[in-house]
Image 1 (cartoon, rainbow, N blue to C red):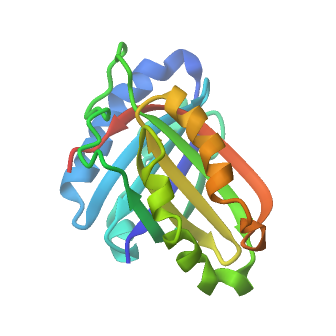
Image 2: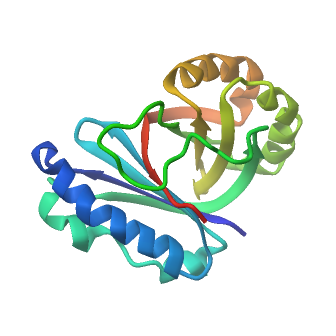
Length: 207
């Protein structure tokens, strides 16, 4: 089953360019050389925070991927937070190419893609009904303008992370409002304790 890993790290903002100069080549190498790697993305979610979101064919492939901490340890201001788990639901928008993504870091990039990560608790006793609930809303997600991808990963028995890819921040902001309507009535599944991160896509693997 596809497997996701999220690495949230804090960095010295004055060393951002130097950090990315070392990090991006390592991410490129991991995406190309690790058997079972499907997709990787790097998102800046605050002035001093970034998230590496990697997707693999299964947990075994994820375990073969080397960590990123060694190459950026000197730039990090505290230990990274790592969460991971199986992808339990996946949605593709009409734009299968994700043409707004970029395959390398650039200081000046016009209209980069925009990424959101929403972590929330779920009721484990309702898990078997959660996937059919989301499936019944797939057509509604397809009508959300600018939404190109949505993946839900279960990072604990009672917690999931929904990662959405939009073409830009305006689409993301509108998409958050649309999602409230689409998921209305879902309180029996989603029980709260929400952590929401968002930001511009800095890098994406090309495979």
